Amino acid sequence: MSIFIISLIWLTLWINMAQLQQGGPDEKEKTTALKDLLSRIDLDELMKKDEPPLEFPDTLEGFEYAFNEKGQLRHITTGEPFVFNAREDLHRWNQKRYEALGEIITKYVYELLEKDCNLKKISLPVDATENEPKNFIFMSEDAMTNPDKLMVLIHGSGVVRAGQWARRLIINEDLDSGTQIPFIKRAMDDNGSPEEHLIYVWDHFITHSAAENIFFVAHSYGGLAFVELMIQREADVKNKVTAVALTDSVHNVWHQEAGKTIREWMRENCCNWVSSSEPLDTSVESMLPDCPRVSAGTERHELTSWRSLPSIFRFFGEASAARSGAPRAALTRRSHRIKHEEV
Image (cartoon, rainbow, N blue to C red; front, side, top):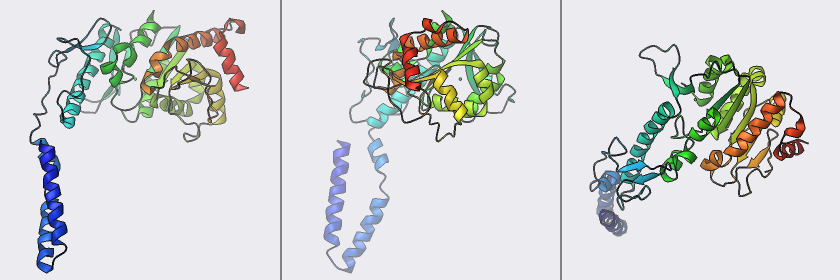
């Protein structure tokens, strides 16, 4: 109703102005006065007058939602999935409610990382003073001492936080597809710009790891951050990293000015699972002279990590076997396809 009334107000003023503009000096003065009046009308405030207060619960229970045994967010009474348009014609209020729920989801995922995955929350910078801005990463207890393998997970940009691939997937699909937890569990059976953050973590943590094999899974902007790490720490990365799985990475070796030796290394040790309508692992052509691109088996950007999980771990297994000197015959057909693409 309020929008309809506002529309009528604008229509009336527009008609009055049109009529006045056809008159003499007095009418023009009235027109100027009307324009001044219009300039002082705050449409946002008019649209907010019937809007409920932007005060939302600070727990999932307060929102009357919970995750079921399948990791799906469901209403605790109706069992229905999350509904964005809880209030009709109140898009701003619905969006703020969605964002408030998203912050709770982030805290919930942090709890899962610590309780279910047994990861430790480490503050950065490591030598920060009490009043200095801080960031943080999560890492396993043996991240610095395990002599075998180390996997590094890098999410994309936007509202996602540590442990997440896409908040929208967590809310609308489930925890498995939207978080990094399946990667963490599978591996056990991330101040300044994202690029600077990754370089800091590399210098202070990853490079000191005892792991013989280090693997990266980098989604979206995370792929760009990894390429920047290679540019800044090329020799060290080549020495320690066994394989890199990119998922719909937005890196660009030309714009980032990655040298020939980096591009050659990426062709041998990286693979980018991209959004595509083709079946999983189908070769996808690229104009960039870097790593092979294959289909993630989905056209949805945020689902590429989840859908390609089994292929990624197969890729890691092949790379680890090759690094240890295992016969090439032991590798799967996907490795042969990558070699064909390189030729």
